[in-house]
Image (spheres, rainbow, N blue to C red):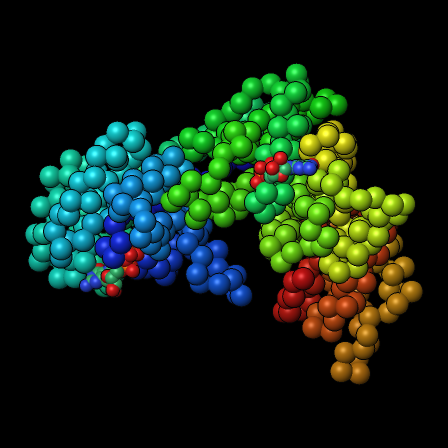
Length: 445
Ligand code: GDP
Ligand code: GDP
C-alpha cells in the first residue's frame, strides 16, 4: 500500500529565518534528506526523515512581493496556499524584532485553518537565557517554541514536535493491486484537458478519494478488471490556474505524484517540434525514481500531417534521448479525444511489464549467451568473467551480476547487457536496473 507523504510548510514574513531553519534541518545528522550529488541546493523542498517518519518539508520563503501588490495580499495568498497544501504548518516569527502586525494577520488565517501549527520564535541565540518567546502568546496559537536557527538550538526538539503533529499514515485505498498513475508534464501541454477527456465522460469513474492533503484528490477508475488510480487529479480536473504564492508547490506536487505512481504519463506538446530541457528533466525524474513511463505527444490535431510525420517525430525523439528508446510513445489529442482511451491499454501493459519476474536459470542463460556474443572487455589485462546473475527485485526489474572484477565493467558494456535483457524480456516502458557484485566491490548503474 502506498501512502502519500505528509507535507510540512514553513511560513512567516520575510527575513524571520525560514531558509536558515530549512537548511539547518537539512543539515541535521539524522534528518536524512534526499541529497543526490548533482542536485542543486536551490530547491525549496526536501524529503526528511525523523524518528521513523518521512515527510516533505517546504520553505515558502523567497517570495518577494510584487511592487504593485499590497504586501498583505501577498502574505495572505502565500499562507492560504500553504494551508491548502500542507498537513502541518511551521509558523516562524522573529524573536529579536518582537511581534509584528503581519504576524497577527498570519495568525488570524492560521487559527481557522484546522491544521496543526507550530509557532517558532527564531533568533533567540542566547538560549536558554531568553524570554522573548513569551511575547508571542498573544498570537493565540499555543505555546511559542524558542529556537535559534543560526546556532541550531532547539531544532531537534522542533523535529520531534513536527513528527508528533503529523497525521497518522492513512491507508489510501482498499485494493492493494490498484495501479497508480500520474499525469506529468510542463504547464500548458494539456494535462488538465487530457485528464478531463479521460475521466470526465467516463461512467466507470468510481468516486474521488481524499489523500492526506486537502486538495490531493485521486480519481480511481475501473478498466478491464483493474483499478487505475489517477493521482492528484483535483487541480487538473478543475483546470486550476496557478495562484500567486503557490508556484513553489507545483514542483513538490509533481515529485509527490511521481513518488506514488507506478506509471507516469508524460505529456508533451506536438506543436513544439521537439523535447525541451524541462520535458527531459521531468521524464528523467520519473525514470530515476524507477517508474514506468509513457510519452503522449498531445495536441496532435494541430500538426500538419503528411505520411510519416509521426514516424519521423518518434524517430527523432528516440535518437536524441536514449531513455526514449524504451518507452511507448503515443500521438493523441485531448481536444478531439483521438487515442486518449488507448493510453489506458498502454498503462495496463507497461504496468505488467515492470512486474515481470524472470527465473534465475533464464537470466543466466541470457547473460551467458550475451557474454558469448560480446565478451566483457579485459580489465588491466585480466580476463573478466560473469559468474552468476539473478533478478533481485521487480517494479522496476533489478538484476544483480556477480563478476570477478566489478570495476572492469564499463558503462557501455552494462548498457549492452541491459539492451540484451530488454530484447529477451521486454520491460517495455520501465527502467531496468543492474547492479554489480564482486569481492568487496560494488557498483551500481
Ligand atoms: P527568510 O526570509 O525567512 O527565509 O529568512 P532567512 O533565513 O533568509 O534569514 C534572514 C536573516 O536572518 C539572515 O540574515 C539570517 O542570517 C538571519 N537569521 C536567521 N536565523 C537566525 C538566528 O537564529 N539568529 C540570528 N541572529 N539571525 C538569524
Ligand atoms: P495543462 O497546463 O498541462 O493542464 O494544460 P491545459 O489542459 O490547461 O491545456 C493548455 C491549453 O492547450 C488549453 O488552451 C487547452 O485547450 C489546449 N489543449 C490541450 N490539449 C489540446 C489538444 O489536444 N489540442 C489542442 N488543439 N489544444 C489542446
